[in-house]
Every structure is written in structure tokens, then in C-alpha cells.
Length: 512
Image (cartoon, one colour):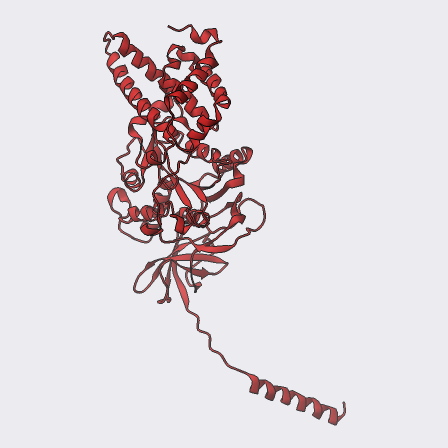
């Protein structure tokens, strides 16, 4: 190479260096970096991040995130949101300057996601409009409206005796294996073509059990209007703790769009246990029955987010069906009493009724709805009072008759009426009953149509009567769905249809 060429190359290099030096604009970027002090089951202690806020997301190596939960003077207790088998003391931690959030939008309908909004159904990435914080304040009182529209469950005993309104919080509680989840799933199935979106929130459940429920929802076409938010039983306690809050944020998005939404929390007993585990690992002092003192607050701030918004805020509603598992029928235990005091009523499922095969095993005497009666269709109100009174009287008289007391004809008739009420309230799973069918059967019941039917033929007679619902006059149907009271003529029409349904069946009229 000639010397002149070499000189030119050197001159060009120095010129580039000089130009870059003149154009260089130095910037300083601050980043807060902490260190993992120690790691335990689902929990990490971090030092060196004094500016961290409560519930802020912190980033760990291997794409692991955690949520700041305990803000002490010298260290931070972090709830880990994922597997921590590769995390160890000394690893770096970075602030994200944002709180835990979840994707929300129409794209979630029909999908199964985890507590952080990650898909769990092999249908590809989630399409979403925006992200909502997992923890959000409840709507203020001035943004709310009274509960004034019914949420039909399709379950006769609930719609008639313990009605639920849109925007209400109705607790379902009972011992293990008494049918709590079945009531919630039947309610979801009954929302088909009723313009109600549903969110099923499974907290710490077995994967096989949730897969079965999802399969049933798909088979009945209910996944077309349902979102499933799921945390497995073997997932970290942090993910189980976040699950109901994440599900509620998804439901709130639709409520704020003016939609009616139903959310099922299955179940908050497991949620309370996950929070107790986190609290004990973080060395928070336990209180009554070993639960931390703020266990009431975590459930009250969750359930307060369910409401009916007024017209100025879209007129949407969020109805909550929290589920609680009792032990040995003890509804006065700490967690059940907490949720009972937060909610607007409870549906109690009795193991004794379950063992007798009276399903759903709803104990009418221990169940109550403190709001739904005001939202109930008016056609139900008259018969609901009569049914509840007749059933309660017959139970008392039935207990009295076990002592061998001789009963007069009127008393015997009341006992027999009560037995038929109990039989009518029996209902198979996943077979919701429409409003006209329910009213046809229940009005026939209080007018004595079933009194001459043998007890073992009541179910068959009920099926025949329900088929007559298609013969109800249009004016009667209009009054029913417009929540107008039925007049005497309407009741006579209904009773006449019921009698007509069973009049040609000799074995149904042979009982005296």
C-alpha cells in the first residue's frame, strides 16, 4: 500500500472520531437495583430498593416477577408470581414502576387465562384493548344504582324463594361435596341468550376438575359468553391470591361498557388459605383461627367491586356468587361469618338434604336474599311467600308427627303439600328451567293441582305441566316479563293449563 493511501485512511479515521465526539450527547439514566436477601416458598426478601411502592411489580432474573407486599425500613417482602426454583440469594432485582395488571377486552370472551392474563387454552395469544390494574378501587356510592333487575338462575328454589338481583352479592356455602359449584355452573348455563357475560374464577382448584367444568360449558355453548380465570392448586400462593382480583378487573371492564356480568369465585376459602400462607411466610402475626387480622379487608374490598352502576356510568352491573366451604356445617366459623357479613344474602346447602337426594340441597330456612326480592319479577312474589310459609309449616308439623301424634285431615293435608313442594324443588344438574315453566309449575303447586298426584308421580306430572308453558297466552307472558302482577284471570288460565296437562293420565289421578 502506498504511503499516500495510508495517510488518507488515517486522516478519515481521525475525522470520524472528531465528528462523533462533537455529535455525542451524553445522557445519564438512573435505575434502582436491589439484591435478593433470601428466598422461601413463594416469597423473597429484597434489599436496596427504598423507593418501591406497595404492590409494585419487581423484576427478577429469568423473566420472573414479584409484587411488593411488605414495605419495611430495611427490606421488602415480595410475593413471587411464578416458579422460584432458579431464584437464589444475591440475584439482582429491578423496579418496573408499575403495579400488577391484566389484559381486558372482548378478546378474552371464550378464553381460559391465568392470574396474569396468560392464555392456558392453546388458542394463541390474547387479543385485548387495554390493561387494568389487578387491584382497583370499588365504584363510589354516588355512581351506584339500586338493584332492580333479576338475575334468573334457572333453579326453581332459588328464583322463587331466594332470588338474586343483577348487582347483588349472594354467598353459596356448605360442606364439601354438597353441590356448591353445581349451582354456580347452572346459573352460568342459564344466562344463554340473556345478554349476561360470565366470569368463572377457579382459585387453587384441581386441573382435572376445572377441565371438566370447561368441557361442560363448551358442550352447552356457554363458553361463547364466559371467561375462565384459573390458578392451579400447585401454583404459588401469590398467583392464587391474585386470581379473584384479576377476574374482577376483567369483569369490571365489561360492566363499565354497560354490560351485565356474573362472576363466580370458586372458592374464597382457598383464597383465604393462600393469603394466610403468604402472611405467615412474611411473618405477619396471626389472629383468630390463625388467620391474619386483615383477612376481612381482603374479601370486603374484593366483593365491594360488585354493584349496579347508575345510568350516568353506563348502567352496567356485576353480580357476584362467592363460594365458601364450611366444615362440619359450622357456618359460624371465622371465614364464613366474614363473608356472610359482607354479602347481601346466602344460599346454604345442607349435607342432610344432599344425603336424602333432595338436590339442589338448599336449606330454605337458613338461606336468605336481602336484596333480590326487590328485583324479583312480580309474578313470583305472591307465590314465593305462600310457598315458603307452607313449606315451613309442613316441616314443623312433620317433625311433630314423628312422635306418633294423631293428626286431623287439615294437618295431614299440609304435611302432604310440604312433601310435594320438596319434590317440586328437586332439579337435575345442568337442566335450568325457564321463567314461564317455573311459574306454571309453582302456581299449579300452590293451587293444589299436585295434591291428588301420588308422591312418586310428582316429577312426571311436573314434566307434563312444563310442556304446557308454550300454550301460555301472549298477554300473560308479556305481564310476566314486564314484572307486572298476575291477576286472578291469569292464575285461572295457568291452573287450567296445568290440570289439562295431567287430566288424561289415569295413574296420576288415582291417589286419594
